[in-house]
Image (tube, rainbow, N blue to C red; front, side, top):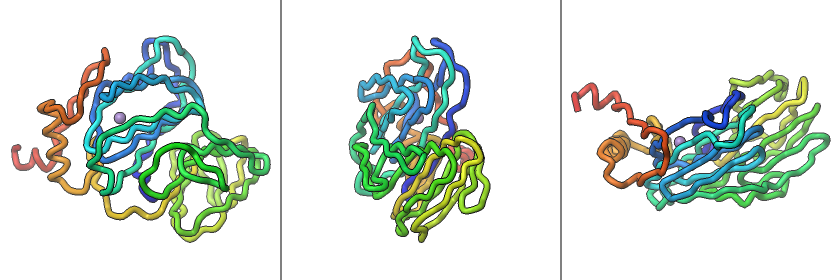
Length: 263
Ligand code: MN
């Protein structure tokens, strides 16, 4: 949907002070990670030197550009439910070879629409703008829906909905956690009917400038670019920096096309 290219529903799961996401240092290129929690806390560390606690209702936004690495860890202080989502945004040619950066947004704009609440993670929605960086026209909104909700959309954006908890009907089609409802372009509004109090992510954007190739943690355009990123991480040549973490560095699996030629 626009530049949105991947979604990973986090939990819900019980975490302890010592064990949470427990994802050791690993690299990214060509994408932004948008981490958003609806309950709990997690800790982000990256090769820029960022060490950032994220709590429910906040966003961590990491722009990889040419290369960055990070870990996602237990906090050492929080135990309880952890629930959220990590979304990836493909970076356009204009920024995908640029230096990496990291932003934390503790306060996000929220608006009431009818009896529901919209939290604007990124982009602009119903006239309200998030401060988060975006490199192409797009929007990401968390919706806490009580009953029926009518939303105004942009006809030039393609949209999708992901339900985090609860269940709803989107223009008459049922959606539950684990599914992504693709709405396409050309919609100026949608009707959402929640069967119970429901949280959903609305993602949208102008159709992306090119096809993207996603392999492991890399977003690129060609196998050759993936090969270069794989080799840089494998050789630890400095492109992805270093993360100060007690967790083990994650090895890249060998791309299947390299295995086929015995590389
Ligand atoms: Mn990651």
